[in-house]
Image (tube, rainbow, N blue to C red; front, side, top):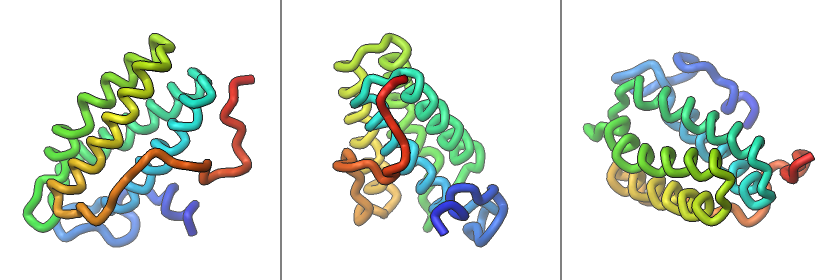
Length: 143
């Protein structure tokens, strides 16, 4: 079931009334990539961290390009306001292999998630740093 949600193509399944994109599927992708990114950063696996940073940017771009609104709230604009700065800082920290800056940027990303959820009337969805990997079959340490 989770695999089906993660791999669902935009336009498949039930989208919102204004767009043919299911926002929850895209948010789930972001959550999975954000969680995996945390463990890649913790292990200082910069190649893997860069991969998940790229995946986050792709999903962010997809949400932004769709110009999504939910219940009259411009979700794409909120996402840009809350996430774009943190994603840029995170990418720079990963490129510089700077653990301290990457951790701070990751925390700003999580804060951005929660700020966006509040602004889009979804403050009941609270994101935090993961405490354990969701995927037990993936090695996060570098080769």
